[in-house]
Structure formats: C-alpha cells, structure tokens
Image (cartoon, rainbow over all chains, first blue to last red; front, side, top):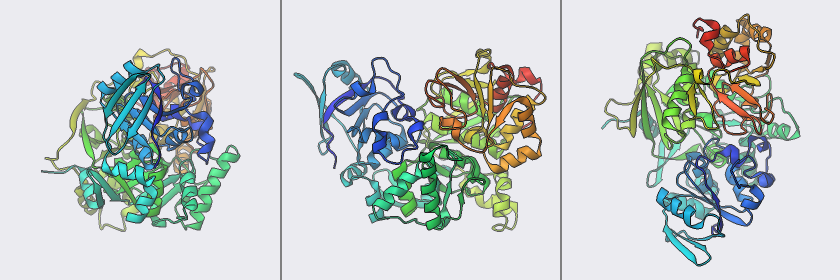
Length: 174
Length: 433
C-alpha cells in the first residue's frame, strides 16, 4: 500500500480537467514515467507553475469536479510518477475518481465547508497532511496550526488501495 | 416499484455485489483503441496475464492518430495490431478500414439494446443511443474488461430528460445537447445516466441520438441512453435479420429495455426545444453556452467538421447543404473528416465530398486527430476553431487555442464567412437532414 502522508499543493479552481492535468499531445507515450515532466503543463492559473507549485508535494487539495473530461488514466499516472498519490477535493468526475483507486491511489471527497476551511487556513503556507486510512482521519499541519478532518472511503475502494489496484483483485475473484 | 432501463440492464448483467452499492457487471462488448489500450496490453504482459476473456466480444481500432504521424504513434499501432493478431480478435480495424470508434462500431452493428459496453474512452457514452449501458473507463478498468469481461460500477442513478416541442429549422441534436449541458453544468449529471425521452427524441435518427448521448459525459454523465424503438430496429436490421422473423418481433424483444412508467429517478427535467436557436460554446468549458446570434461576427482561423459527435453522414449532408455552391472565406482553413470509410463512401456517392472540395475544404481520412489536438488540424497559439466536436477545454485542439463547439450547419456557415455565423442567414432554407 502506498503512503499518503506529505506536503500539500493547493489548486484553487473547480473543473480542473484531464487535458489540463496531462495534454493529449503526450498520450503517445506508452510508459508512465515518460509523463513526468508534463504534469499540469497546460493549467493556466494565476501563480501556478507546475515545477515550483508541486515541488515536494505529494497531496493535492482542490475544488469541485476535479478530473473532468477524458477517461485517460494518464492523468492519475502523471500524478503517480511525480509522487502525488492523494487528491482531496469537493467532488470528482466519475472516471478520474475510479482510475485513482484502480491504481491504488486515493481521490477523497470532503464537504465544501471543509475544503473552504483548508483553503482559508492553509493555502499559501507550507502545509503537511498525515493520513490514517483505518480511522478515516486527515491531520493538516502548517507551523503550529493543526486541523483534524474526518473522511470516509468505501470498503471496496479501501480494498483496492490495500491490494494496490483492481487487476489482481478482479483476476482472482471473477 | 418500477425500474429504469439502466437498472434492468444491470439486473441482467450483475455477477457480484462486492460491497455497498458497488456492482460488478458482465460485459457484452469491450471496445479498444490505440491510445489507451497499448498501456493495458503492456501491463497484462508484464503481469503474466496476456489473455482475453472472449476475442469475439473485443473490438479494436486504430483511430486517434492514423496514419501514424511519428515513431511513437507507429509503436502504439503496432502494439494493438500485434495483440489483436495473437489473440484472434477478428474485429480489428486497421488503416483503410478504420474510423472514429464511436461512429465505426455502431455502424458495424456491434451495439444492441440491453448491451453493456466499456471502452478506454470517455465518449463511450455515445452507444447508449441504442438502449445500451456504455461507459468510458480508464486503462485499469479496460484491462480487467479485456481479461475477465467484467467491470465494477456504483449502482446507477438516472436523470430523466424529456425533450418536448419540435425542433425549429436549422436547429439540430447538437444544439439540444449544448443547451442541456448549459443548464446542467459540467458536473450536473456526475455518476448518473442521462435518459433522453420524449417526442423530439422519438423523431430523431440514430445519428442524432448518438450526437446527444455522445456529450452526456460533458455534463459528467456516465452514459446517455435512449429507448430502443422502430428507428433502432431499422438501423440494426441488416445485423439482426437472421435473429428475428420480422422487425416487429425485434421491436417486441427490445421493448424489455424501456424504463417502467413508475421507475424512480434521481431527477427529471423537461426541455422544450420549440423556441431553441442554434447554440455554441464561448469559453473553455462545455457548459459555457450561448445562442450563436450573440457571438456572430467573431473571427475564426479554422473550421473543423468531424469527430464522434458530428462526423456522420447526416452531419456532412447538413454541412454540404449550407456550403453548396459557396466558397469558404480566404481567412479560414476548412478541415472535414468523414468519421468512417462508409461515411466517406456515401459522401462521395452523394456528391458531398465534391461540395466540400469545391468550397475549399481539406478532406482528411477518418480519424479523431484534430478533435484532441493530436494530428490533422492542430491549432497554433491564439488561434480559434469553430468545431463540431465535443470538448472546448483550454488547449484541447492545440496549446493556446480556443475551440467553439457548434452544429455542422453553424460550422459550415462560419466557414463561408470566416466569422461565427448563423446557418439560417446564409442558406435561407432548411438544411435537409
């Protein structure tokens, strides 16, 4: 199972789509590793620069409808090869969310109020989160400021995370 | 309590209910193309699981970049081609026989009412037009589909959209779905199936129904779906005539795939299209929609007619009716991609290709290429394209480019003037569809 603890990068916009996460021109790559330099290359957002905004980050916090658009699993892979295994958002597009769990990563929804609090209290500060999957608890920390937020992941999704993905699970069971 | 068509399809295909509302269903078809499948193939090989659950239920095509534009795309084609050969996948469509997957596979009769279909492509929702459950999935789900013929979904919920009134002249399925996405928003149907019903849908061709269902994903929908009816039977008849003694018998069988009157919905809405005018997108999200009349005069650099949304024969006929005898503006590049070889052949036979060429369009082979900025019509930074495609994300057709989504009629009129134009103003007549 992957470790989900780490530094948080904040993306303060709804509807971040798969073309922004990894543009189609890179879909000719047939290895995940080759996607590494291109994560979020086309995301036009004030103050966002892929290299510096994601430096050292392993968690992304964003707004509603994250990962909308294409079915490309290249989007989760582009995160994975950059060491980002967890996206926390107000909501996700169905396929992106499923792809994350299918790869043994996590896409966790939090209520809008919690997301608002995360942005207002932690955005712009060096923030870390620790993740307890069993208890369903995030602990966000920036300097002295600490915030605990509960979350839930279904038993099925949890089993995918623990199994490291869906392929072996399905081959064994069906 | 009654059931929706999607619930009935799930009931007939459920093989497991591993946890909560997760349902594992048996698949009637797994569709594959050369962008998302090679990685799945490589992973199966690496895991020592290079198997397919049933080669007759797997259909594969090279469509996104064809002919190959460089060594990387050539390698993608080679991986899927070699795989199809070694597993005896007979329905593999290579160059010369290939076309845009969501136009080609229906045309071959691969989708039937009541079917379950997945593909590593978000516009797989198109096939719901046949009364099927068809969903786009990622590479891992595709891989499991190839290996085991199953896929896991959350229990489906349905948003019912009744389309009433009658379509005015010059207004098409594309305008209806753009207006609907404008109302729903880009996540208005997330985790839901959009069920299209009502008199306007009943009077639509299969091509128009596919245009509608194709863009369900742009509102976040898992699938679009229409009830199978006599139009569906007529379309499928060449493929099913051996299975049924008559069209009436086929229709009677297919009627099991219709929602019950007392089915429970997650939401219902009515869209009266009698007053609808041609619609288009103006921003970087498919729900940023305006009447074409409010955007008229905006200059464009390229007009693209094609894709799994609007590259079928009906679409080319509509565009050709607008273009006939005219010439596109000097300031604009016109690109048309008939979606399949069969569409291309029909367009040739009907003189439509001639009309496009006389008007100054470049006619390409069937491919998805330009729609997602991979080949055959990529935009330069700052350029604007009027397109009959389905996605207007920033950079979709090329880094720094702007895409305006619209119907083939509007795109054709726009090509003539080089500026966003209402087709009715340039033809003064109803384009025959």
